[in-house]
Length: 174
Image (cartoon, rainbow, N blue to C red; front, side, top):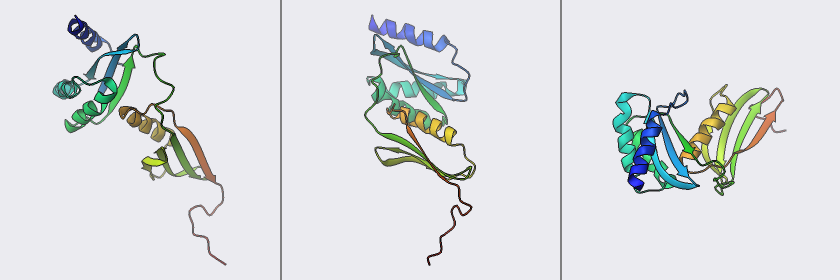
């Protein structure tokens, strides 16, 4: 009976319109009464159906948290570039955090972003030094990657700003 329920849920998920997004694939975990039921991968392009099937097989027998890494790895090996993770039926079930301290740090010179990084438990997870990058976009994209690895904590935002005219120039010792 559980297998039949899982198949019906998967069929229903496949028929649901996924909100317009730029993602090539969406990994969906389905929960009922805060218990994991099944997961599936939805793709927009027919040529990615094989990658989706392989990703689902890679996570077979695993819980959603353990299966996310296997699914993402399989999708990336098959050329999928952008992947998002969603949970259905999980509202009100998530723990308040996954126990990690996540911090997003931006260093500005005036209005120009010099560099940014996201740290998890003080270890650098991601960083960028791209001139004129959007800190908000960097944090949003990195938060998505963190979720793919099972880290659901909201980053604490730290902004460091130097308003002097000499940002980034060496100070001459006197």
